[in-house]
Amino acid sequence: MNVNKLPTEILQQILKRVAMGPEQNMATAAPALRRHLLGVCFRWREIILNMAELWTFVRIYLIKTEYEGKETTFQNALATLDLNLSRTSSQLLDIYWHTSLDGSHVTQLFKVINTRAPFCRWRSLEIDTDFWHSYKLHSIRSDDRFSNLESLKIRWCQREGLLLLINSTISSNFRSFHNIGAYTPADLLRDRISNIMSRATELTLPNFGAALLPPLPPQITTLSIWSMTLQSTAHIRHLTIHLSPSISQFFDHDWSSLISLDVLFTRTQQSHPLPQQTILFPRLQTLVVREGRFRSLISISAPSLVSLRLERGHESIEKANRSLFDTISHPSYTVKSMGKLEIGFPLSPMVLASVIRDFPAVESLGFGFDDSYDGWEVIRHVICERRYVKVEWSERLKDNFMAGVKILKLQMNWILGDDVFENPWKAYTAKIFEDIPGKQLETIRCSWPRGDSWELTRLNWEKSHSKVDGSKQEEGHCAL
Image 1 (tube, helix red, strand yellow):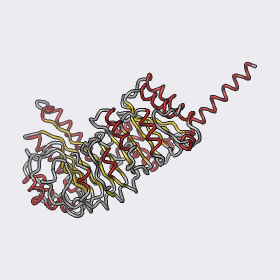
Image 2 (image 1 turned 90 degrees about the vertical axis):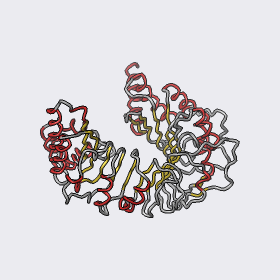
Image 3 (image 1 turned 180 degrees about the vertical axis):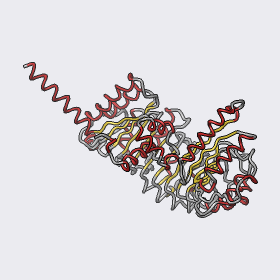
Image 4 (image 1 turned 120 degrees about the vertical axis):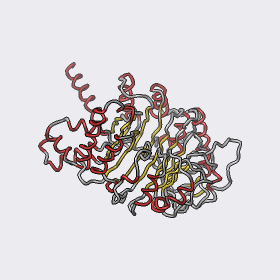
């Protein structure tokens, strides 16, 4: 079917989904993709230019050194910004700000902002550099407020003026404050931007330890901090801790509301005794453990867990494998009932066989490879030929090998594009379908670091396999 014969309304929805990228978010979609769509044909160009929602992510990237002595270049950049803002109609805007201008360039930039994109239209703001250092607060219209701002992410903001202005003008729409790289005095968070803190439900303060963390308002449900908080956690649903806590620090908290946890546990040696009791996370569904430190998992009970992801970080592959093997082999380890397991580093044949044996409920299994040849050798040895090095298997498990796995994800840590690697892996995935009995395994998906990926489903493999068999039979008849 010719796509240009579709009604305009349907074509609009198709182009919108394509332009927004795989995450369906204009803030993460590449502007280059939009430019490619604009160049396809006159009809597509007209549709895209008149869809205001496709222009609401505004990237303001103006660096002083690029325009020194190049006034024409600066005016062209400003004209492009003005044109793109004019296409947004009255839609709310997602602003990414990275500027280092001064003098008349700052005045001209804010003249465009005041005219085309006043603060009351800003839905989200991400700042990569301080734009307040050269712009005076008295230049802002008195009626311009951040009344629709929902999210504020600061990577660098030297002055307090912006935070104070936002704090005094935000409304109940505000919900997300991420202070990622900017130095912010604790008293500023505690006292002077209390409106931001009292309205946010998502809070990211990775540079604040437990001692400096201001009191957490009860409406905070998503928290990302440097070290384990000493405050109440009964209301926290999503928690990220960047500095490795001891598992014992979790015992004195209420985790009844926690749904997801992303943590880097402190390293515990095999000789160090683990706590006698376990920590109950009754509602925990997603758990990410980083830096190859998995032994603390033995002290965790998570009956509702859906997804477990393990990362080795800076730990060596050998140590991460040893830590994982010792953990899942421990008689007190119970975190096994999740349906999704992703391991972001290469596994030895023995560890992969142990994972398949000890996680029978897993429906989606993923693991990584650093080397194409070694990766295939592990898969061939364990999955295709089902030879288990130093791993005891019952006859029942041998007969029901990978019986529950529906999706197999292979994460390749090298760049896609070399046929020497790409074409063999397409053959390898077909070999896996051929060697695994039954039809439980539905999809094999391969992914690469730059976002490239492809997949083979059992249905497509069976179709191609039947065609090959049919052509062989025809050749046989011809030979006779």
